[in-house]
Length: 340
Image (cartoon, rainbow, N blue to C red; front, side, top):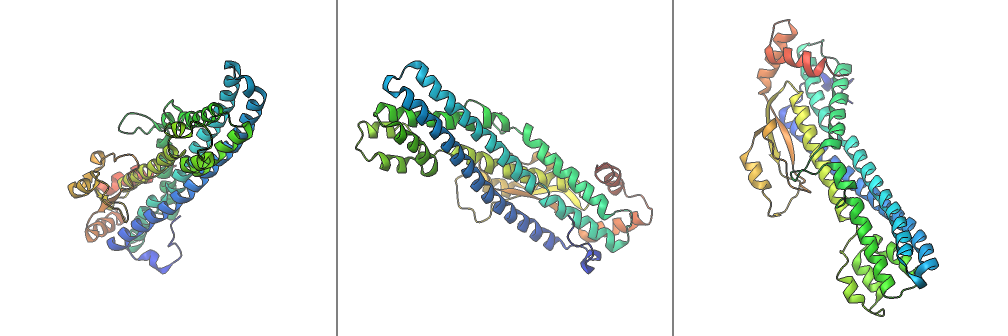
């Protein structure tokens, strides 16, 4: 929501420096939301591990002494159900954090427009109209999550549900843990606990639990990846920042005070990761259709350029008096009036 309505500042234009600072503050808030989302994702994995442990223990207790193909199929079926829960939980967490952050940038641009309009007496631009515009832009960002493709051509859904996605990744790792326990002759209750330990704390904790007392421990350890949730964590983080970049673009496109260009802004407090992002930042500004895709887990963001504010306010003042100003006419009949 526009946060200055009812305040004396509402009739004072938001300065370009304050606009940039607000974008930076919103980016920091998005990072905090991302941290909370990853904590929720960890809970998803722990719950799935508890579910898998219970049913695997039961299946193994009834079939471990004679591990036929049917017995293993029963175990795998139960693991697959838990993997479905991981995939569904990952999708829910990703959608929630994108929905929570989608309006951060549009609200800033709407506030920039509102305060500029109030300062020149453009009464036709209202708070409620701008709030509808923010809602429409935010919905576009959330809806694009479903169809967004990474540079390798895989969609968000495929990265969760596909064979190499979050679901398949978790399923294969749990099968490795169970198979390792069976091959070592571990008690079913211990194998069930192995699932929980590995999910919560990773391979090091699991191998410490094995302790070298079971035969073949080192050989099995070499086959199991170090941590269970890296793929889902990376997916949620990547989608969050891809959505932030998209939100910035659609917000800038709907702000007549913008000039149609965008800066590539390096992530906050970043270190040299050996990626191309520093070069991307130097090569800007970019038009909307030229903005780079970014690499997986990229935490960089984009920020709209603004027209010279004095020029924008002068045009807005003319437009408020009934004169035709092309880009303002287009904005009013387009992003503003068409918002539902």
